[in-house]
Image (cartoon, rainbow, N blue to C red; front, side):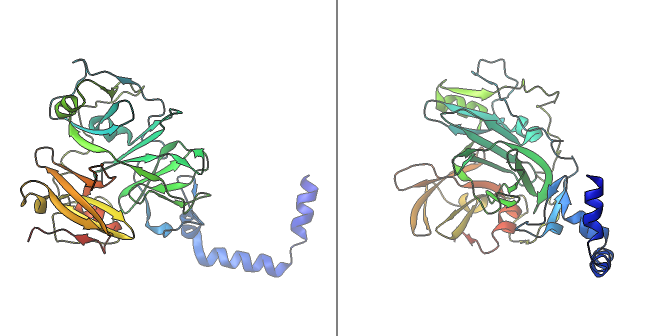
Length: 323
C-alpha cells in the first residue's frame, strides 16, 4: 500500500509541487487554521470564517443536556418565585427550563418521538429560542461547538457536524449549510407565574443533570447590565443600551423589533403589523418579557434578545417606536 501511494505521489509533475508549496507559503498557517476551528470544517462556510470566534471553552466544553430529566414542581426545587424560566407549551403539558441551568448548558435536546424539541440559550445575546430539530425527516441532536458568530451561539448537530447559527436558525457550514430549523414559540416567565398559569400541569427541568454546577449562580456576573460586549459583532447601533431587551420577529422577508422601553410607553396591548400580517404585542414589565400573537391569539415564535444581538443580525430591521 505504501509503494502504491508513493508511486501516485511520484506521478505529480514538479510544477504542481512548486505551485502548491508557493500557495501554502503565500497564504500562511493562519489561513489554513482559519479553515478549521474546534475541529469543524469551515471551507464551505456561508459566513466569513474569520468572523467565527472561539468563545473560550472547547467543543462540548459547555455540555449540552442530551437526556434531560423532568419533575413536577413540589417545593423541593431550588428556584425562587422570581427566577426566570424559558417555557414551552406542548400538546399535553408545559415544560419549564430554568435560566439558571441554561446558563451552564445552553442546549437541551428532547428526543421524544411524539414531540421532539430543541431548547437553546445564548447568555451572551440573551436569546432563548426553541426549534423543531427534525430537518427533512431527520431528527438532529445538538451540542455546543465552543464557537461564536456575532457573539451568538454556534451549535452543531451530531449527525453531520454542521454548524448552526442560533439566532438565524440556519446551518452556516458543513453538509447541512443553508438548511433552516423551524422556530417553536417559547415564553419567558417567572417561576411562580409559570406555576400559576399551568395550574400544576407542568414539568420543570431537573437540576440532576449529571454535572456538578451551582445553578443558583450565574457564571456571567453583571454582564446583563454592562454595556460591554465580549466579542466583536459586524453591525452596531447606539440607539439603545446594548443590553436593552427587545422582541424581534421575521416574517415574509421583513423584520421588526419592539424595544421594551418603547412598549413601556404604552398601556395594554399594542396592535401592529409585519410583512402584511396583523399582530399584537403583549408586554409584561415585571418579568420583563413580551409575547407576539396573531389575529387568532396564537403565540408566534418571536425572539427576546438584547438590542445589540438583534441589530447585528438584522441591521435593516424596522423599529417600533412609541411616538
